[in-house]
Amino acid sequence: MSASLHIKHLEGARKANQLIAITMLLIVVTLVWAGFATLEEVVVGEGKVVPAAAVQQIESLDGGSLKEVLVKEGDMVEAGQVLLVIDELRFASAYHEARQNKQAFENQLIRLEATLNSVQFSPEQSDWLSQVTVTPVFFNITDSQSDRRAQAIYNSQLSQLISQLDQTAQMVEQKRQAREEVKITIAAQRDGLTLANQEIQMTREAVAEGAVAELELLKLERDAVRLQGELSAARASERQIVAAISQAIAERRNVALEFINRATDERNKISNELSALNENMKALADRLDRTQIVTPVSGSVSNIMVRSPGQVVEPGQVIMEIVPQDDQLIIETRIAPKDIAFVHKGLDAMVKFTSYDFVIYGGIKGEVIYVSPDAQQLEDGTTYYEAHIQTIENQLNGWPIISGMQASTDILTGEKTVLSYWLKPLLRARANSLREQ
Image (cartoon, rainbow, N blue to C red; front, top):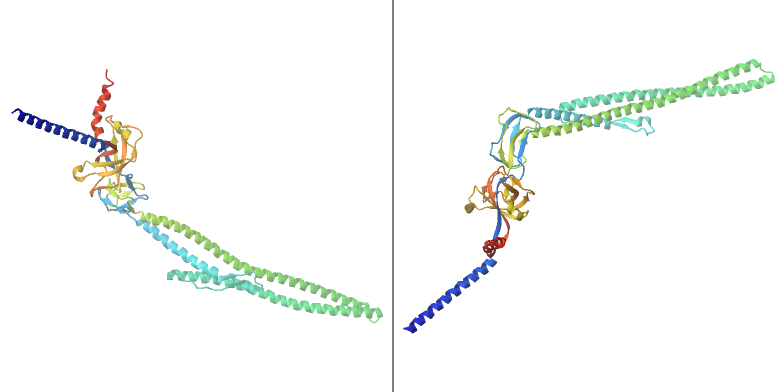
Protein backbone atom coordinates (compact mmCIF):
# COMPACT_ATOMS: atom_id res chain seq x y z
CA MET A 1 0.00 0.00 0.00
CA SER A 2 2.77 2.38 0.94
CA ALA A 3 4.62 1.50 -2.24
CA SER A 4 1.58 2.34 -4.32
CA LEU A 5 1.26 5.68 -2.62
CA HIS A 6 4.93 6.38 -3.15
CA ILE A 7 4.59 5.64 -6.87
CA LYS A 8 1.62 7.96 -7.15
CA HIS A 9 3.53 10.62 -5.27
CA LEU A 10 6.42 10.34 -7.69
CA GLU A 11 4.08 10.42 -10.66
CA GLY A 12 2.46 13.59 -9.36
CA ALA A 13 5.81 15.18 -8.72
CA ARG A 14 6.95 14.33 -12.25
CA LYS A 15 3.83 15.91 -13.78
CA ALA A 16 4.26 18.96 -11.60
CA ASN A 17 7.84 19.28 -12.73
CA GLN A 18 6.73 18.92 -16.37
CA LEU A 19 4.08 21.64 -15.87
CA ILE A 20 6.63 23.93 -14.26
CA ALA A 21 9.06 23.25 -17.09
CA ILE A 22 6.43 23.92 -19.73
CA THR A 23 5.38 27.10 -17.93
CA MET A 24 8.97 28.28 -17.66
CA LEU A 25 9.51 27.45 -21.33
CA LEU A 26 6.41 29.43 -22.28
CA ILE A 27 7.60 32.35 -20.16
CA VAL A 28 11.05 32.23 -21.78
CA VAL A 29 9.57 31.95 -25.27
CA THR A 30 7.18 34.81 -24.51
CA LEU A 31 10.00 36.98 -23.18
CA VAL A 32 12.15 36.18 -26.21
CA TRP A 33 9.23 36.99 -28.54
CA ALA A 34 8.48 40.18 -26.61
CA GLY A 35 12.13 41.13 -26.85
CA PHE A 36 12.16 40.86 -30.63
CA ALA A 37 8.57 41.53 -31.71
CA THR A 38 7.93 45.23 -32.50
CA LEU A 39 4.89 47.46 -32.45
CA GLU A 40 4.47 50.79 -34.24
CA GLU A 41 4.65 53.88 -32.07
CA VAL A 42 2.27 56.57 -33.27
CA VAL A 43 1.25 60.10 -32.39
CA VAL A 44 -2.48 60.62 -32.79
CA GLY A 45 -3.90 63.90 -34.04
CA GLU A 46 -7.27 65.30 -35.05
CA GLY A 47 -7.87 67.54 -38.04
CA LYS A 48 -9.68 68.14 -41.30
CA VAL A 49 -9.19 68.06 -45.06
CA VAL A 50 -8.16 71.34 -46.70
CA PRO A 51 -7.45 72.03 -50.40
CA ALA A 52 -3.83 71.55 -51.44
CA ALA A 53 -4.19 74.78 -53.43
CA ALA A 54 -5.97 77.95 -52.40
CA VAL A 55 -9.65 78.35 -53.19
CA GLN A 56 -9.88 79.97 -56.63
CA GLN A 57 -12.02 83.08 -56.87
CA ILE A 58 -13.51 83.37 -60.35
CA GLU A 59 -13.66 86.95 -61.63
CA SER A 60 -14.43 88.80 -64.85
CA LEU A 61 -11.54 91.05 -65.81
CA ASP A 62 -13.61 93.23 -68.14
CA GLY A 63 -17.11 92.87 -66.72
CA GLY A 64 -20.26 93.12 -68.77
CA SER A 65 -23.78 91.75 -68.93
CA LEU A 66 -24.27 88.12 -67.83
CA LYS A 67 -25.48 85.93 -70.68
CA GLU A 68 -25.57 82.43 -69.15
CA VAL A 69 -24.38 80.45 -66.11
CA LEU A 70 -23.43 76.89 -67.09
CA VAL A 71 -22.80 75.31 -63.66
CA LYS A 72 -24.50 74.87 -60.29
CA GLU A 73 -23.09 74.91 -56.79
CA GLY A 74 -21.57 71.54 -55.96
CA ASP A 75 -20.82 70.64 -59.59
CA MET A 76 -17.42 69.08 -60.23
CA VAL A 77 -15.58 70.89 -63.01
CA GLU A 78 -12.36 70.24 -64.91
CA ALA A 79 -9.61 72.80 -65.52
CA GLY A 80 -10.46 74.84 -68.64
CA GLN A 81 -14.21 74.15 -68.43
CA VAL A 82 -16.50 77.10 -69.24
CA LEU A 83 -18.39 78.26 -66.14
CA LEU A 84 -20.40 81.19 -67.49
CA VAL A 85 -20.67 83.46 -70.52
CA ILE A 86 -20.63 87.27 -70.61
CA ASP A 87 -22.50 88.99 -73.46
CA GLU A 88 -19.88 89.39 -76.18
CA LEU A 89 -21.78 91.85 -78.43
CA ARG A 90 -19.76 95.00 -77.66
CA PHE A 91 -16.43 93.20 -77.96
CA ALA A 92 -17.52 91.31 -81.09
CA SER A 93 -18.55 94.50 -82.88
CA ALA A 94 -15.28 96.25 -81.95
CA TYR A 95 -13.32 93.22 -83.13
CA HIS A 96 -15.27 93.09 -86.42
CA GLU A 97 -14.58 96.78 -87.05
CA ALA A 98 -10.89 96.24 -86.29
CA ARG A 99 -10.78 93.35 -88.77
CA GLN A 100 -12.26 95.57 -91.48
CA ASN A 101 -9.68 98.27 -90.73
CA LYS A 102 -6.93 95.68 -90.84
CA GLN A 103 -8.07 94.48 -94.27
CA ALA A 104 -8.16 98.07 -95.51
CA PHE A 105 -4.62 98.70 -94.24
CA GLU A 106 -3.35 95.49 -95.84
CA ASN A 107 -4.95 96.48 -99.16
CA GLN A 108 -3.26 99.87 -98.98
CA LEU A 109 0.09 98.22 -98.32
CA ILE A 110 -0.37 95.97 -101.37
CA ARG A 111 -1.14 99.03 -103.52
CA LEU A 112 1.78 101.04 -102.13
CA GLU A 113 4.22 98.18 -102.65
CA ALA A 114 3.05 97.92 -106.26
CA THR A 115 3.42 101.69 -106.64
CA LEU A 116 7.00 101.65 -105.35
CA ASN A 117 7.90 98.65 -107.50
CA SER A 118 6.58 100.49 -110.57
CA VAL A 119 9.17 103.28 -110.35
CA GLN A 120 12.84 102.51 -111.07
CA PHE A 121 15.13 105.29 -109.82
CA SER A 122 18.77 105.03 -111.00
CA PRO A 123 20.46 108.46 -110.76
CA GLU A 124 23.87 106.93 -111.55
CA GLN A 125 22.80 106.19 -115.15
CA SER A 126 24.53 108.39 -117.74
CA ASP A 127 21.43 108.47 -119.94
CA TRP A 128 19.10 110.95 -118.26
CA LEU A 129 16.00 109.16 -119.54
CA SER A 130 17.20 105.89 -117.95
CA GLN A 131 17.59 107.57 -114.56
CA VAL A 132 13.82 107.39 -113.99
CA THR A 133 11.60 104.78 -115.62
CA VAL A 134 8.02 103.81 -114.87
CA THR A 135 6.82 100.25 -115.50
CA PRO A 136 3.29 99.41 -114.25
CA VAL A 137 3.09 96.12 -112.30
CA PHE A 138 0.18 93.77 -111.70
CA PHE A 139 -1.30 93.38 -108.23
CA ASN A 140 -4.47 91.78 -106.97
CA ILE A 141 -6.67 92.30 -103.91
CA THR A 142 -9.11 89.57 -102.90
CA ASP A 143 -12.11 91.81 -102.38
CA SER A 144 -13.27 92.95 -105.84
CA GLN A 145 -14.64 96.30 -104.70
CA SER A 146 -11.48 97.12 -102.76
CA ASP A 147 -9.42 95.91 -105.73
CA ARG A 148 -11.19 98.29 -108.12
CA ARG A 149 -10.70 101.18 -105.72
CA ALA A 150 -7.01 100.35 -105.24
CA GLN A 151 -6.45 99.94 -108.98
CA ALA A 152 -8.07 103.34 -109.62
CA ILE A 153 -5.83 105.07 -107.05
CA TYR A 154 -2.76 103.26 -108.37
CA ASN A 155 -3.50 104.21 -111.99
CA SER A 156 -4.26 107.81 -111.04
CA GLN A 157 -1.03 108.26 -109.08
CA LEU A 158 1.07 106.58 -111.74
CA SER A 159 -0.56 108.64 -114.51
CA GLN A 160 0.12 111.83 -112.60
CA LEU A 161 3.77 110.85 -112.14
CA ILE A 162 4.17 109.95 -115.81
CA SER A 163 2.60 113.29 -116.79
CA GLN A 164 5.03 115.23 -114.58
CA LEU A 165 7.97 113.24 -115.91
CA ASP A 166 6.84 113.88 -119.48
CA GLN A 167 6.61 117.62 -118.81
CA THR A 168 10.17 117.75 -117.50
CA ALA A 169 11.34 115.55 -120.38
CA GLN A 170 9.72 117.93 -122.88
CA MET A 171 11.44 120.82 -121.15
CA VAL A 172 14.78 119.04 -121.45
CA GLU A 173 14.18 118.36 -125.14
CA GLN A 174 13.21 121.98 -125.75
CA LYS A 175 16.35 123.18 -124.03
CA ARG A 176 18.45 120.70 -125.98
CA GLN A 177 16.95 121.99 -129.25
CA ALA A 178 17.60 125.57 -128.19
CA ARG A 179 21.21 124.67 -127.43
CA GLU A 180 21.62 123.13 -130.87
CA GLU A 181 20.33 126.35 -132.43
CA VAL A 182 22.70 128.42 -130.30
CA LYS A 183 25.58 126.17 -131.25
CA ILE A 184 24.80 126.79 -134.94
CA THR A 185 24.67 130.52 -134.28
CA ILE A 186 27.97 130.37 -132.41
CA ALA A 187 29.61 128.50 -135.26
CA ALA A 188 28.36 131.07 -137.80
CA GLN A 189 29.43 133.96 -135.62
CA ARG A 190 32.81 132.39 -135.02
CA ASP A 191 33.29 131.94 -138.80
CA GLY A 192 32.12 135.48 -139.47
CA LEU A 193 34.53 136.84 -136.88
CA THR A 194 37.37 134.88 -138.45
CA LEU A 195 36.59 136.35 -141.87
CA ALA A 196 36.26 139.83 -140.39
CA ASN A 197 39.67 139.54 -138.76
CA GLN A 198 41.18 138.39 -142.07
CA GLU A 199 39.55 141.33 -143.87
CA ILE A 200 40.89 143.71 -141.22
CA GLN A 201 44.38 142.34 -141.67
CA MET A 202 44.23 142.79 -145.45
CA THR A 203 42.75 146.28 -145.14
CA ARG A 204 45.41 147.28 -142.61
CA GLU A 205 48.11 146.36 -145.17
CA ALA A 206 46.29 148.31 -147.89
CA VAL A 207 46.03 151.36 -145.61
CA ALA A 208 49.75 151.12 -144.96
CA GLU A 209 50.37 151.19 -148.70
CA GLY A 210 47.94 154.13 -149.10
CA ALA A 211 45.63 152.15 -151.32
CA VAL A 212 42.64 152.29 -148.92
CA ALA A 213 41.41 155.04 -146.66
CA GLU A 214 41.83 154.45 -142.90
CA LEU A 215 38.09 155.01 -142.43
CA GLU A 216 37.39 151.66 -144.10
CA LEU A 217 39.67 149.96 -141.59
CA LEU A 218 37.80 151.56 -138.70
CA LYS A 219 34.46 150.32 -140.07
CA LEU A 220 35.82 146.78 -140.34
CA GLU A 221 37.23 146.86 -136.80
CA ARG A 222 33.86 148.15 -135.49
CA ASP A 223 32.10 145.25 -137.23
CA ALA A 224 34.61 142.80 -135.74
CA VAL A 225 33.94 144.14 -132.22
CA ARG A 226 30.19 143.75 -132.80
CA LEU A 227 30.68 140.16 -134.00
CA GLN A 228 32.84 139.38 -130.97
CA GLY A 229 30.12 140.70 -128.67
CA GLU A 230 27.47 138.66 -130.38
CA LEU A 231 29.66 135.55 -130.15
CA SER A 232 30.23 136.10 -126.42
CA ALA A 233 26.50 136.59 -125.90
CA ALA A 234 25.74 133.39 -127.80
CA ARG A 235 28.24 131.44 -125.72
CA ALA A 236 26.75 132.85 -122.51
CA SER A 237 23.32 131.83 -123.76
CA GLU A 238 24.62 128.31 -124.41
CA ARG A 239 25.95 128.07 -120.87
CA GLN A 240 22.57 129.16 -119.53
CA ILE A 241 20.81 126.57 -121.68
CA VAL A 242 23.21 123.83 -120.48
CA ALA A 243 22.49 124.84 -116.87
CA ALA A 244 18.76 124.82 -117.62
CA ILE A 245 19.05 121.34 -119.14
CA SER A 246 20.85 120.08 -116.00
CA GLN A 247 18.22 121.72 -113.83
CA ALA A 248 15.40 120.15 -115.84
CA ILE A 249 17.03 116.71 -115.61
CA ALA A 250 17.49 117.21 -111.84
CA GLU A 251 13.86 118.35 -111.60
CA ARG A 252 12.82 115.14 -113.35
CA ARG A 253 14.77 113.12 -110.78
CA ASN A 254 13.25 115.20 -107.96
CA VAL A 255 9.74 114.54 -109.25
CA ALA A 256 10.40 110.79 -109.11
CA LEU A 257 12.19 111.00 -105.76
CA GLU A 258 9.38 113.00 -104.15
CA PHE A 259 6.87 110.49 -105.50
CA ILE A 260 8.89 107.59 -104.05
CA ASN A 261 9.33 109.38 -100.71
CA ARG A 262 5.61 110.14 -100.41
CA ALA A 263 4.73 106.52 -101.19
CA THR A 264 7.39 105.26 -98.75
CA ASP A 265 6.20 107.58 -95.98
CA GLU A 266 2.61 106.52 -96.56
CA ARG A 267 3.63 102.85 -96.54
CA ASN A 268 5.56 103.28 -93.28
CA LYS A 269 2.66 105.13 -91.71
CA ILE A 270 0.18 102.43 -92.76
CA SER A 271 2.59 99.72 -91.57
CA ASN A 272 2.87 101.36 -88.14
CA GLU A 273 -0.89 101.76 -87.91
CA LEU A 274 -1.33 98.12 -88.92
CA SER A 275 1.10 97.00 -86.20
CA ALA A 276 -0.79 99.03 -83.60
CA LEU A 277 -4.08 97.65 -84.91
CA ASN A 278 -2.76 94.08 -84.67
CA GLU A 279 -1.88 94.67 -81.02
CA ASN A 280 -5.32 96.15 -80.44
CA MET A 281 -6.91 93.15 -82.14
CA LYS A 282 -4.99 90.81 -79.85
CA ALA A 283 -6.39 92.69 -76.87
CA LEU A 284 -9.90 92.60 -78.38
CA ALA A 285 -9.54 88.88 -79.12
CA ASP A 286 -8.47 88.30 -75.51
CA ARG A 287 -11.49 90.26 -74.32
CA LEU A 288 -13.71 88.26 -76.64
CA ASP A 289 -12.22 85.02 -75.33
CA ARG A 290 -12.67 86.25 -71.76
CA THR A 291 -16.42 86.51 -72.29
CA GLN A 292 -16.30 82.75 -71.76
CA ILE A 293 -15.05 82.50 -68.20
CA VAL A 294 -13.28 79.22 -67.47
CA THR A 295 -11.93 77.61 -64.33
CA PRO A 296 -8.14 77.44 -64.03
CA VAL A 297 -8.29 74.36 -61.79
CA SER A 298 -10.34 71.22 -61.36
CA GLY A 299 -12.61 71.21 -58.34
CA SER A 300 -16.11 71.84 -57.06
CA VAL A 301 -18.23 74.95 -57.62
CA SER A 302 -19.28 76.96 -54.59
CA ASN A 303 -20.62 80.35 -53.57
CA ILE A 304 -22.11 81.51 -56.92
CA MET A 305 -22.71 85.27 -56.62
CA VAL A 306 -24.25 86.06 -60.03
CA ARG A 307 -27.06 83.97 -61.47
CA SER A 308 -29.58 85.98 -63.52
CA PRO A 309 -29.07 86.58 -67.28
CA GLY A 310 -28.71 90.29 -67.96
CA GLN A 311 -27.27 90.97 -64.53
CA VAL A 312 -24.34 93.40 -64.68
CA VAL A 313 -20.96 91.97 -63.72
CA GLU A 314 -18.47 94.60 -62.59
CA PRO A 315 -14.81 94.31 -63.65
CA GLY A 316 -12.93 92.35 -61.00
CA GLN A 317 -16.12 91.23 -59.25
CA VAL A 318 -15.97 87.75 -57.67
CA ILE A 319 -18.57 85.63 -59.47
CA MET A 320 -18.05 82.24 -57.82
CA GLU A 321 -15.42 80.10 -56.12
CA ILE A 322 -13.79 76.82 -57.11
CA VAL A 323 -12.53 74.53 -54.36
CA PRO A 324 -9.58 72.73 -56.00
CA GLN A 325 -9.73 68.96 -56.40
CA ASP A 326 -6.12 67.84 -56.53
CA ASP A 327 -4.53 64.43 -56.92
CA GLN A 328 -3.32 64.85 -53.34
CA LEU A 329 -5.03 66.03 -50.16
CA ILE A 330 -3.72 68.12 -47.30
CA ILE A 331 -4.82 67.20 -43.77
CA GLU A 332 -4.44 69.92 -41.15
CA THR A 333 -4.03 68.04 -37.89
CA ARG A 334 -3.54 69.16 -34.29
CA ILE A 335 -0.76 67.55 -32.25
CA ALA A 336 -0.64 67.68 -28.44
CA PRO A 337 2.41 69.53 -27.05
CA LYS A 338 3.49 66.38 -25.16
CA ASP A 339 3.87 64.51 -28.48
CA ILE A 340 5.36 67.24 -30.68
CA ALA A 341 8.99 66.32 -29.87
CA PHE A 342 8.65 63.14 -31.93
CA VAL A 343 6.91 64.71 -34.95
CA HIS A 344 8.91 66.11 -37.85
CA LYS A 345 8.75 66.42 -41.65
CA GLY A 346 9.06 63.21 -43.63
CA LEU A 347 7.29 60.88 -41.18
CA ASP A 348 4.76 58.44 -42.58
CA ALA A 349 1.16 58.69 -41.43
CA MET A 350 -2.19 56.95 -41.75
CA VAL A 351 -5.25 59.16 -42.25
CA LYS A 352 -8.64 57.88 -41.07
CA PHE A 353 -11.78 59.76 -42.05
CA THR A 354 -14.64 59.94 -39.60
CA SER A 355 -17.11 59.82 -42.49
CA TYR A 356 -15.87 56.33 -43.42
CA ASP A 357 -15.56 53.46 -40.93
CA PHE A 358 -11.86 52.58 -40.81
CA VAL A 359 -12.62 48.90 -40.26
CA ILE A 360 -14.65 48.78 -43.48
CA TYR A 361 -13.06 51.40 -45.72
CA GLY A 362 -9.55 51.64 -44.34
CA GLY A 363 -7.46 54.81 -44.53
CA ILE A 364 -5.07 56.68 -46.81
CA LYS A 365 -1.30 56.76 -46.39
CA GLY A 366 0.38 60.12 -46.22
CA GLU A 367 3.51 62.01 -45.22
CA VAL A 368 4.13 64.86 -42.81
CA ILE A 369 5.14 67.90 -44.91
CA TYR A 370 4.90 70.70 -42.32
CA VAL A 371 5.11 71.18 -38.55
CA SER A 372 4.37 74.59 -37.06
CA PRO A 373 7.38 76.17 -35.32
CA ASP A 374 5.30 77.39 -32.38
CA ALA A 375 2.25 76.34 -30.44
CA GLN A 376 -1.21 77.72 -31.21
CA GLN A 377 -4.40 77.97 -29.18
CA LEU A 378 -8.04 77.18 -29.81
CA GLU A 379 -10.78 79.50 -28.61
CA ASP A 380 -11.19 77.35 -25.49
CA GLY A 381 -7.50 77.81 -24.66
CA THR A 382 -6.35 74.35 -25.72
CA THR A 383 -2.73 74.46 -26.87
CA TYR A 384 -1.64 72.48 -29.91
CA TYR A 385 0.91 72.32 -32.71
CA GLU A 386 -0.31 72.24 -36.31
CA ALA A 387 1.02 69.64 -38.73
CA HIS A 388 0.17 69.12 -42.39
CA ILE A 389 -0.07 65.65 -43.87
CA GLN A 390 -0.11 65.19 -47.62
CA THR A 391 -1.80 62.07 -48.92
CA ILE A 392 -0.74 60.09 -51.97
CA GLU A 393 -4.34 59.76 -53.18
CA ASN A 394 -7.43 61.94 -53.25
CA GLN A 395 -9.95 59.11 -52.90
CA LEU A 396 -10.54 56.37 -50.36
CA ASN A 397 -10.75 53.20 -52.44
CA GLY A 398 -12.90 55.04 -54.97
CA TRP A 399 -14.92 56.97 -52.39
CA PRO A 400 -14.65 60.77 -52.66
CA ILE A 401 -12.80 62.89 -50.13
CA ILE A 402 -13.90 66.51 -50.08
CA SER A 403 -12.64 69.63 -48.37
CA GLY A 404 -13.79 70.01 -44.76
CA MET A 405 -14.06 66.30 -43.89
CA GLN A 406 -12.92 65.49 -40.35
CA ALA A 407 -10.06 63.03 -39.96
CA SER A 408 -7.85 61.44 -37.34
CA THR A 409 -4.19 60.89 -38.09
CA ASP A 410 -1.73 58.29 -36.83
CA ILE A 411 1.80 59.59 -37.34
CA LEU A 412 4.38 56.81 -37.19
CA THR A 413 7.20 58.11 -34.98
CA GLY A 414 9.08 54.83 -34.48
CA GLU A 415 8.89 51.25 -33.26
CA LYS A 416 9.26 49.58 -29.84
CA THR A 417 9.43 45.98 -28.74
CA VAL A 418 6.53 44.40 -26.90
CA LEU A 419 8.83 43.89 -23.92
CA SER A 420 9.57 47.61 -23.71
CA TYR A 421 5.82 48.33 -23.63
CA TRP A 422 5.44 45.79 -20.77
CA LEU A 423 8.34 47.22 -18.84
CA LYS A 424 7.44 50.88 -19.40
CA PRO A 425 4.92 51.09 -16.46
CA LEU A 426 7.36 49.31 -14.15
CA LEU A 427 10.24 51.57 -15.17
CA ARG A 428 8.07 54.68 -14.73
CA ALA A 429 6.90 53.46 -11.29
CA ARG A 430 10.47 52.70 -10.26
CA ALA A 431 11.66 56.14 -11.42
CA ASN A 432 8.87 57.84 -9.48
CA SER A 433 9.42 55.72 -6.36
CA LEU A 434 13.10 56.57 -6.20
CA ARG A 435 12.25 60.28 -5.96
CA GLU A 436 9.73 59.91 -3.08
CA GLN A 437 10.72 60.53 0.53
